[in-house]
Structures are given as structure tokens and as C-alpha cells.
Length: 366
Image 1 (cartoon, rainbow, N blue to C red):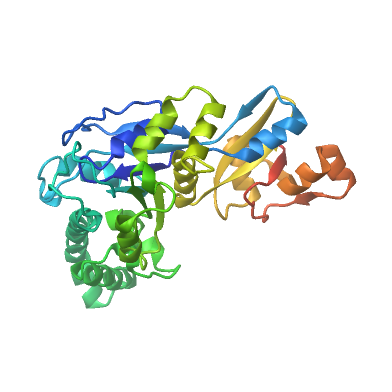
Image 2 (cartoon, one colour; image 1 turned 180 degrees about the vertical axis):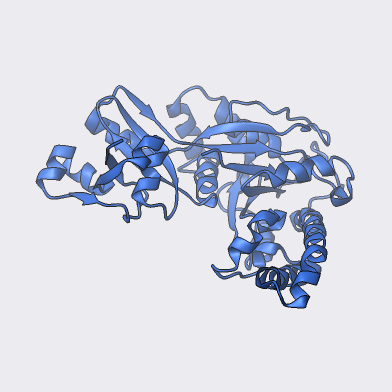
């Protein structure tokens, strides 16, 4: 399930530094615009404390966490929607991602030159928003031209529904609002699935701060919070330079000591990865046995047969039932046998909606 989050932002806001902390794939981090040209893709392990706790009970041969893909995309400048800078490449790369991690510079440092000469995260956010909105407006106008005649003649109901939705999108974009602010009901959403609008992707804002602001943020962060309060977007505070220092430390103990010294209980990178996973609407079910304790990725709302198919397509085709133990019950009682004896193993059929943290065993017949 190769879903991707794309890291975007203006040049020199700390995107590549953050990406380096996230991934073993090293993006070039340099103090000049466009040092990132080709998108770097990192396959990132999702931290999950539940795996370690299960492993203590099961003592497996190996532990296999789940992953998420993060893409570091070239910095964008004004005029990208018209092809300025690396605009066309940027927009093509971001269109291929499933969600956006938007990095905003919220720190002062005279040694790192801002592309616009001053620090203003709201201006930076607006520059990228406008470029993405302009590209989406171009997409919407093109589609309106294609369906308008069919919709207005009244003979094509599908065209009429699509046309009305397109008009809603156009109105929002002309007002400087992103497509994600337009409410569509469940019946309308399938009509616009193939538009792939840039501003309809879920977004998370990363406020890149200095070490002193890593815990509580600063005035820049407060301004960002106020600006995005109606966007239904998550905000994370991360000190990318500090995270880079943490990443250089060799042992877990050293990293934890460093975190404690700056007042953090968990690294910004760990919080970012977990948030990116949720941003993609992903959850985790678990399997536990003597060979391995493993995390498996599925979409929120999936039913048992779909989740069985994550392990192997044959499991979904020949699905009979799922044996499900809740994670908390397993940890409390200490083993699968104890859960079964206590009546805490449920047998579920094809309509069971899998929950995050469910420990699953599938029965199938092909």
C-alpha cells in the first residue's frame, strides 16, 4: 500500500533537513534555493510501542513494523503555476502524492537566507496556497468547458451533477479558498475522484522552529495556528535542526537524554511520522506469533476480508472468518490462549469493521 505524503514548502525552510531526519535516504541540504530537484522518496518506519510490548510476551524471532512513504519535493516559488522556477515539476510531483506536509519557517537565523529576504510564515503559506489554487482553477475551468454543454441541455444527469460541483469548486478557488473547504456529500464525491485537485489533499502544517521554541512554539507558530483554524488541518511544532542533532546520536538512551534536556518526551520526527500515517487515513492491525510480531497497514473503515487481503490476496478470496483479540486484552491477559480461555477472542465474519490495534488471525480456504 504505497501511499505517499509529500513535503512541500518554499526554498530554505528546512524541508530537506527534516526529510534527512525522517529517512535514511539523504536529501542534499544546502543553503541555496532548488538544491532539491528530483523528489527524494523515503520509506519511513512508523513508531508503534505496541509491537515491543507484544514482543515481550510472545518472544518472536523478529518484529516487523509498518511503513509510510515520504517524498521531499523541490521548493516552490511565485509563478510556479505558470511554470516559473521548477513549478511544473513541483506541481506534477505533488499531484502524485496522497497528502501534503507543508513546512513553514518559524525561526530566525541570519546564516540561512530566506528566498524572500524576511521571515513570515503566513506569507510563505499564502504563496504556495495561491500557486496550488491557480493550478486547480485551471483544472476546474478545463473540465467545466467539457461538461457545460451536456449539463445545460438537461439530457445528461451525470454531467449536470458534475457541473454543479465544479461551479462550487470554482467559486471557492476564486475566493482564495482551497478545494478541501468545499463540502461534498457522500453521493457527490465519486463524481470528482478523477480531478486530483492539489488543494483537496489533506494537509498538515509543520512549524519549523529553533530549539528554544521546540516545546511551546513562538509568535510565528501562534500566527499560523490562527490562520489555519478553519482549515481542519493539523499543526506540529518541530525543530528540524535539533532533530538533525538527535539523529546523529548512536544509541536510544543518548537520544532520550537529549530529548529530556530540551523538554520533550518524544522526538518531533516520531510525532510527524505518526501524524502523517493518520493524515493518510491509515490504521494498523497486528499479528502475533513465534515467528514474528508484525504491524499491517489498512484504510480506516475496511472490513475483515479487505484486511486479510493485505497479508495475501488468497486470504481475501477464500475468507471464512477472523479471530480477533483486542490489544488491551492481550496485554492484560498475557497470551492468545489466556484470551481464548477468558472469552476475549471474538470470531468475526465478513462485515466486521477492523479497528486500529486489533490482533488478527484469519481463517481462509482457497
